[in-house]
Image 1 (cartoon, chains in turn cyan, orange):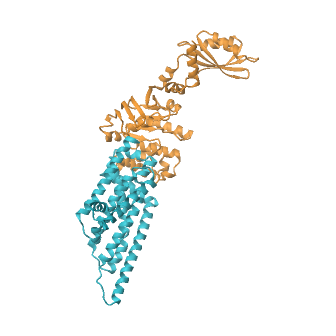
Image 2 (cartoon, one colour):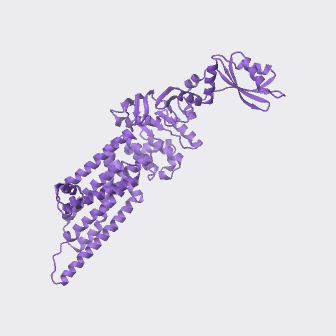
Image 3 (cartoon, rainbow over the protein chains, first blue to last red):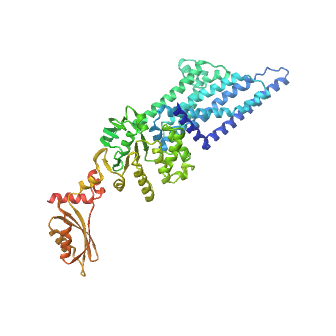
Length: 255
Length: 329
């Protein structure tokens, strides 16, 4: 456990001494800010309109703002995940520092979990930056904080799974660009797979749709903590890290 | 300290290391010598548990590389061919990170970082980014990283590659200085390095050990009889090398005379004596009695280079000559 923390701290250090972390944070915060402003503007506009028409509709900040916002940001996250994970192992393989890690008295799994945890923490910091926008919601409105909190938990769990997949892909190559592009492709695929479920109800379509991470975010965004979805995300995390460990092991036979 | 038994590494299409066996005693510096691609790095990677062997076994500091890899790693300091450095870290930060990986903490960690910095002369760049350091400094930080946890065994893969001559000397001295506390294996394809730093040599070629011996024994082994270089000068007249050669060949105990080079009024010969005969005295007398000057007479040390080429089967010109001679006799 101590070793996991040593690796994790070193990775966080690497993120934050290079421009990577700041670039991701700023881009994420700006894009989230834009979505926030956009959705808020639309909601205000329509409620004003309905008020003018003399038939005011009931307003629900959680349903009308928090939920679409979290769903949008969940998709935005897909674009950021490859940028977080692509260097994790590819860089170490390219510069040869992997030899240091592999010949130190730490277990492979400690290295893997340490690196993955650093990626998750960076993503968590990115999510933290969006709290700024939410602060305004709470100041000028009175949304329920619990569904929002569960939404954030869902974001983090799903990102954990995708980051684990990204970590795995990063062990397959010494080229960061390849690792990033492949991870991006997989993330996109896991998103769009859900679309088949919208028009097709055959078993294969249901299976494909079930495999999509976005499908499993739906209930989180509503503020419902469904064990089925949490277990799905936990499984993705486990499988991602498991394959990373196998890939690390195969390095010892091949390289 | 290190026992290797028929260690083998096979890949799909080739065998990088083929049944290597050797032993290294505690406190020794052993040179691992071989041409590029001989399997040096692969062997070292197996000893450090970076690679899993296909067959055979090895123990390091009493621990089996299969059964107790974590213990082996705890007792080994390893410097790969390219030092495993993170350019975005500062020297002291990096050494402290490696120290933690190796299980150090607290006061001990801090004192070991200071010690390693001092020992490897990197104290003055302690707070510099590793990415900004020169090649020589990086190599030394790499060495500092290897000794940070005071390991019993140091495995250094081409520690002087890519350094300038001054840095090479510094690094060699540093390694020699470390020898007291650690058992060291270092690989190289540079021969003088071995004769200058190591006590014991393991020569490896195409994945096999071709010789294991001390440096001096190896040199003796390759030298069959006495071999001397003689420089002769004509007193006031010009010199006819052929005459001198004939004269030298007549000296008792001389088996062969090779004309090496011709200068103004002087000539150099390499003279080989028969086994166990010392011909130097007779040679000197013969030269002087013939009325020539003896400018120089010295033992021609057989260089490690020649031994190496003989053993690895690549033919040097000398080896070819000797072989041709053997056939005519």
